[in-house]
Picture 1 (tube, rainbow, N blue to C red):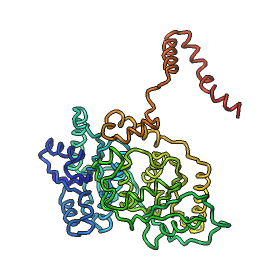
Picture 2: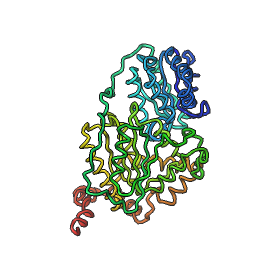
Picture 3: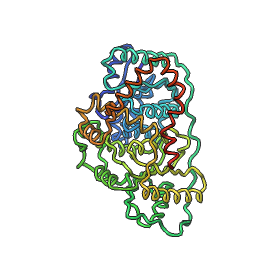
Picture 4: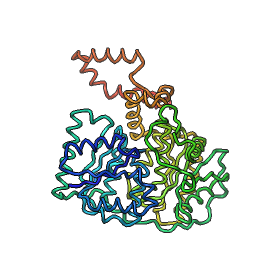
Length: 459
């Protein structure tokens, strides 16, 4: 079979992702793996219709497709996503239809599931049969057990593609587009005083669309106008190149090449950040995604600590739970408060006006109170993955991360209290005594809540 490998790494063949592809190519020489550097050439394909058509023709003649990509900021890289947008914008879906597809991602298994869900849904929207996803850590290939796992995955995919095995659909088609939003007069008695707080709006809004009207309506709620940065109007020379030049000191190799670093400086200085995006396929725009990718020069250092964050979304967000999860995750990982997400799905302009006004009030109230909601698994689990990876194997590369984690107590293991460790050791010994073990079980429920009862009594 001939398999079109769509490479999402901007580093061509000098990438971790492509080493896995090369390994499969050598292990299964009977099948041809035709590698196409999608992220590298995305900007060229956007400008050059012939270059885009050449790749589409290659997909058309292939028997199956492998989405092979690193995971950047909870998804695929921005330029990779831009290629997917072009497929739909230019009506090239037929080249993919009825082919089997699989995804191979490389990461530290940090939100790889959201990247897989995105590629799975896109494949189904293209009329493909999605036959599975494989998540690889950077050096899994050097481990015998992982090589065997990868080989078994690939054999199963090849068999499914050769036999044209049917696959069940997981994601429903997107069925609606938002109605035109027509803002009405404000119901606020007067614009809301910001108390000198800096409000920054980052938007990918096109002129005259719903999103632009939502941004304008929300901004009108504040007595002091927020600063609005339209990402379509700034110079963004490239997406994140994955070069890791920033790992030592959080300085991007393209710091002085375009406007991205300056916008991130505004973001860091803001008290309230509102990000406004339009749904394209199963995510927000590639432009917004590329901007988020470029923020990787901060590495894994949270830059939103204590800030209020909100999202304005134009499009069918309720039908894309994977997108909602990533929007919830980003503020939590950044130790910020997600004050709300407002979309134009409600179909009622008056209701949307009210939702935007309520969001403005909530942003200012939470900022005044310094409120940040309790972290969920998204933040706690995500932090532990990054913490362990940096401590165990990446701190010599991500020096700036290691320094920040160490200075801010994010390395919260092992238990440092000698008293607690000795007490736990003593109780472990006592639990070998049958009588103590019986009494321990009898008291377990009441003793578990004793510290909480004391707080309740004193409330």
